[in-house]
Length: 167
Figure (cartoon, rainbow, N blue to C red):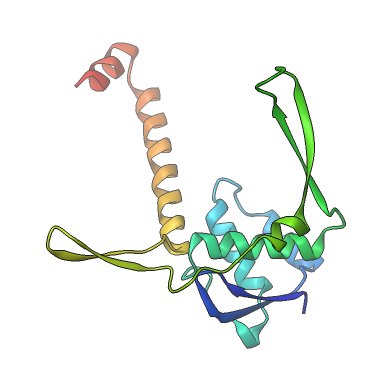
């Protein structure tokens, strides 16, 4: 076992991850990098210990990010990540090392559930965070839209594209 943690959206749910093997890395290498959310689901499915397994497609996007952060912290030798930015005062680029331990130390789990209910226009509305399945679907829609736009642009001349975008 590499690490054990609880999901931010459900502190009662424990998750244990294991370290990837060479065979795992080979499996992941054949996946299209345009499908980051799908890769995240596959990675989290394969890296979980079976005793605490839960489907990462049902986790919130924040749960998934936290799991990937925990995996990174427990598998890297680097204890800081360099952050390069352009300074608004002097206009120069600067680099600052961000401590991974400091990020983890400042983490506090949410109080209550990640899902909120509130009254709106005389009805109860429920706000829920996007799940991994939701994020995968949005990613596929975005890819399909980009592909369709590319196909349209290559099959239409400039005047036809202009006419379609003006309508």
